[in-house]
Image (cartoon, rainbow, N blue to C red; front, side, top):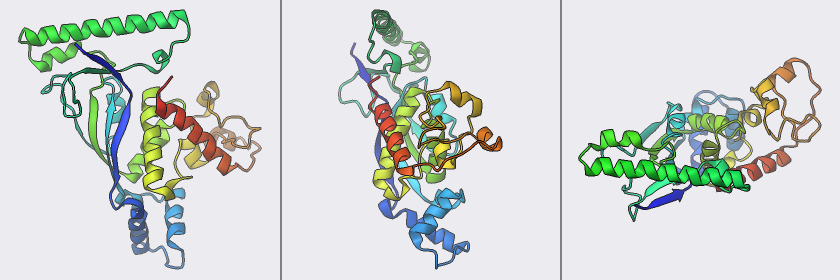
Length: 279
């Protein structure tokens, strides 16, 4: 029995109409009354930045993703998305079209990726032992004739069977990224969202500077008191990248002009760490 540790992964990322997909949005905007005197790129950015985002639903994005059995329900909370998934009811978990060699793929939790002390190393060891025990029972059940749809109930949370082919529009994707590029999102989903971010700005460069956590996109963080208990890099009111909470704005807090270039750089450095999935 081969157990392979893998990382959360995005692949086959495609934008219909490629780098020119944003022009579809401008075409729609013109139809609804945006005058021709407003140049195309400016019109597109105005629509995104002002949240006139029904028009950006015309941009269609496709990709494949792999995540844990446990994290999959979080992804499925994003309901305005079409997805076709890997079936543990019909496919043996060690098999599948994306596997050249049969293997039980698992995703190691973020905090056990690189244990630095003896106690955490022991936790990682116990984790792998218990995973192996469960997978042995899974194989035993199958060999004894138990249907896959019942044998799968013993599969561990970390099993990398949350595999989906996804079709989503840009409006829904920005909603997903706004929520999952936040320091409060689960590490696994942050890893996936960060990969999507870099694919998106590579395939649709016009989006750089308009994508990030909700605080970055809106210019105000909706987390309020909760954010103060996190490691959010934007919460220091004395920094050049300070993004206030909605509550701070309502309380007439003293605000400074944000350094957009520094903010984008800080975000992307953080996303690179999350995307690597190295702990």
